[in-house]
Image 1: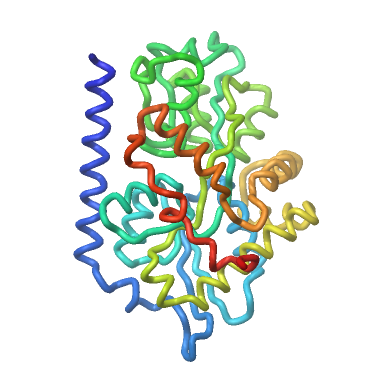
Image 2 (image 1 turned 45 degrees about the vertical axis):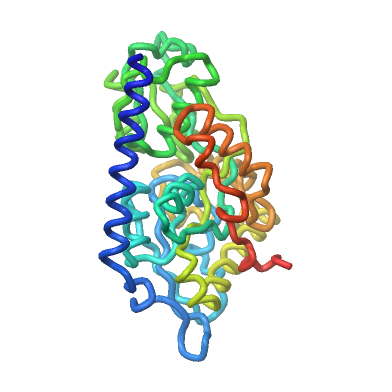
Length: 338
């Protein structure tokens, strides 16, 4: 009964958040087409405002493209950093940015509210967060976390979704854990080290850095396909700015292809992110990150089904709310699109 009550409370909170997004969209109607970004004169590529949750390397293909400037001549790309995906989605719907390196869930939830978002490229098709604990901890598995404080970046985040999945896979009631928002990077590391949380969700490159230090070890890591990062945009904006969107996606695809053929080039590009890790750790994290980028930047129907099946299984998505593949994605603007 308590689990059902918590589930209903989470749904209510999600509904409030989505209602806020919808209200912002309605109050900002027209902003996305009248802002400073979009196609230039004569339909040429102009400028584009691209957002991501910074601090990690889950949107690695886009980070490399921006840092190494692999975009066609004439396209100006403005990178915007956000602390949370919900804030970035509000900015996208409100018209103050054009593309967000968000998640499949962002598209499904906003389309359920009648908004015209879609995913236009697959950026990362592996779940990025792993569960770490201090080396001397008594925690050996997810089952040891019942009744314990467990850190995620923020409630409702991708890290939180992954914790739901970790609990489901280990037959642990998610509500038996005391889930707290503990931030990312050094903030999460400190929370684990000081015992504020028994374990916490960490992404690359901090994940490799913490394990290499010898002070932290892995409790759980994902081993499934998951469309974790996609290029989300409003379809009306894309239709009005086709040249800009195609040029942006061409630049990201170029970076992805160069990374796969030359990991040293990828490492050089990612050093521009200034992660507080050693070159050795970053090199290892980059090599692993390259494998998470789908060929052609396209999310397959199989990966989409894997993603939604997992979301349904942990109760963060109702089965009847799963949208058809072609309503969530439009890959016709990618360079390899037929």
